[in-house]
Amino acid sequence: MDDPRLSAEGELALARLALDEGDLRHAAGHLAGALAYAPTMPEVHEVLARLAARSEGGVDLFPLDHHPFIGAVVARAHLLAATGRPDEGLELLAAATAHAPGADWAGVPWVSTPELPALLDPEQIARLLMQICAAVADPVDEDEREPLRPYLLLARHAIDTYPDHGLLLGAASALARRVGAIDQAVAWADTGARIMPSKLAEVWLGYAYRSAGRTAEALAALNRAVDHDPDDLSVYADIAGTLADHGRLDEALGWIDRALLRDPTFDCAVHTGHRLRYQRDGRLDHLVALADFRRDHPDDTHEHGDLAECCQGQPWLGQIPAAGEAVTNVLRQVLADEGPVRGGQLRLSGLEPPSAMRAVAAAVPGLAVEVAEVAAPDIREPRRSSARRLWSYQGTIAVPALPAPSPTAVDRIRQLAHPAWPHPPAAYDAAVGLATLEVDDLLGLLVHPPAPPATPLGRTLAEHDPTLWVRCVQVWACLGLLHHRTDEPWADSTRRRVLVDLVWGVEDWVTEAALCALVTAAWVDPAVRADVATIAAERLADSVAVAQQRPVSIARSLAQLVLATPEITPDTRATARAILATETPAARPYRWLSRLWHHLRRPRP
Image (cartoon, rainbow, N blue to C red; front, side):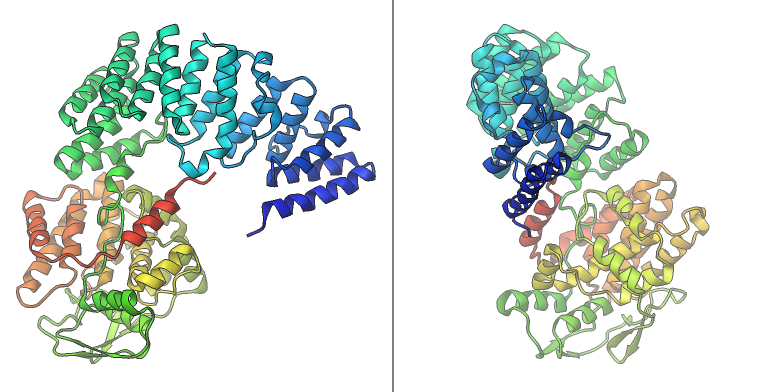
């Protein structure tokens, strides 16, 4: 990765050359580039001052066109401040911070001087602080707070200058809370609420108390906010969320019901209500109803994370579960104990799914596997004779029966496949990136999974569990099939026919992947739910029948898929739960994956 300071020095050198030659426009362009790389570098500001001295302030050299470069915006901000217009300059710095909060745009002397607030309107400062708060997390991660500290210092100086400005105190409290200055946030918000009694002041105070762990005082403040404005239903949702965070679900849902009585479509109450009801009784229909609401109300007031929060870490709702075969368990243990190995011998009491056998063989070159017997019913035969055959067998060795996918398909799946997603509709939306691939390519990916990509995720999977990467490829290939010929009516569509064929093929990870795609279709289209519920129930019943004669390694996963299926019948749900109660869970080496997934999901500045 390039060193930002070195890049800034390169731009700075070019700016000096252009300035020496009198080419002010080019000098300005290179200075904007230098500021983008190193916004607090003293040498950059020195050359910016030289440019200003030779161009009547230099502001016009950094115009705000339709899509201005952020370095030019920041340069203009500094020059506006230098020419006696710090209010305009601060507006631009705040806009830059809102656009890219991870850069230290405001870490310069003129922003932190105690005299600055006296040159500004306190209401303008409050608005700027609120703009920044809206653009960052609440709270901001500790390692990302430093670029915001100049604004906190500005807030302190502003309150010293305007100690009785209620709006400023509240906005400053909101910023302080986000950057971990909790005691300061409480003090400012408390003063603000006494100076300016209002709904907004009480909300700020309630949030500050909540961040400080003072729950009773937080609830009291939020209740006062409702008294100020009984029609602001977002406060009802905030009270409900605070109560739920402390295990008081019934009280929380009471507040949600009060909000919904006033407006049954108020998005915050709908989202929070479905999440809390799911937390209370674990019924899938709450999450499905929430997904339907999201689909029918695309213009919500803001982005909500309730559905993702409920699905995160849940098998098939938010991630692909670990494979449960004996061969995969052995592979994970070997990789954990010894790292990559070659050769060796492994004896199995029975033949396992072809994807599992081939994934382990690929991960351990030269491994000799001895299978004691192939129990009936023969795992090498499709569960329905009409099903598409992806594999042929040479004894107990599975061989792909389909040609390899195209390089385009390989590149596309390596970019897209991932072991986790926010929720089923999000997985469906992401899979649209595979919509242009042909069916033959998608099917080829199922039996010819490419190597994982050279990304942090790919390297981690290769090191810890290469079988999970194979499952990722298969799941996303099947999700891609959902986007094939979407103009065809579902009942007779190619996408349904192909996926159902895969569900009833040989007992394999592909069975799980295809059923996952069908379940995802049911999440996004209510019209197909009854059909998918029937398919899922029949496939689970078949696995139960087979399990009476021999082990079925995918039974647990099929049961989890059934429990993720909308409109499943109570009897089928009971069967799935009984399987999960008796089946031994697969080994779950996923702490490393959970950490990686959390890292990858974090919003980028």
